[in-house]
Image (tube, rainbow, N blue to C red; front, side, top):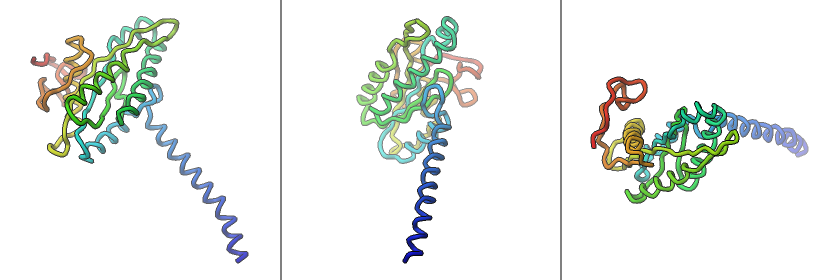
Amino acid sequence: MSSLVSALAVAAPLACGWSVHSLWLRRRIETARRDPLSGLWTRDAFTERAERRILARFRPVAVYLVDLNRFKEINDTHGHPAGDAVIRATGERLAAWAVDHSAVVGRLGGDEFAAITSVYSHGHLTETLHRLSETLEQPVEAAGHVLEVSASIGAVRANPRAERVELSELLRLADEQMYRAKRCEAPWSNALSLNKECPTVHGRRAGRSGTHGGTEATE
């Protein structure tokens, strides 16, 4: 009996040590998958989680693409520290919105962000877009300046239970709607179907950076 007690006395700290190490390792891995500036998921981490939600086929989803307006102008006029402050503020705002809407949100790169939520109806999607737009359109104080911040948001709704959909295609459609919102100087635009409006070049909307032969979306 005494030998068993002794063995347990030795094993308990070791098990505790391994548990702490495992927790530390998991946190390190999660930190590595977070964008250091915005605090949101990186592109790869967002993609993994968003695809998992689509494959679960639990309920209809909406995919959003967010692009900050005049971000290059902020960088050019006030410097990159001001631009970094805008990205940080945007990350914090998107993270808070994500909690309220059970969303997965990531920074795709630069001033472009993506999100996925569950939605119940077209009206529910419209409500989430209103809330998202209001959340993002708040001034940011940086380098002694008050910077006006706004975003163009594109969204598309799909029902994975009724139709085969892929994240890349939904992001492509959300990108079209983001482009439409930006052209029309509207805060957001959402697709009414899963049909593409713009030609695709190398898997991207024609006219996007990295493509040739840009064209406008049809009305």
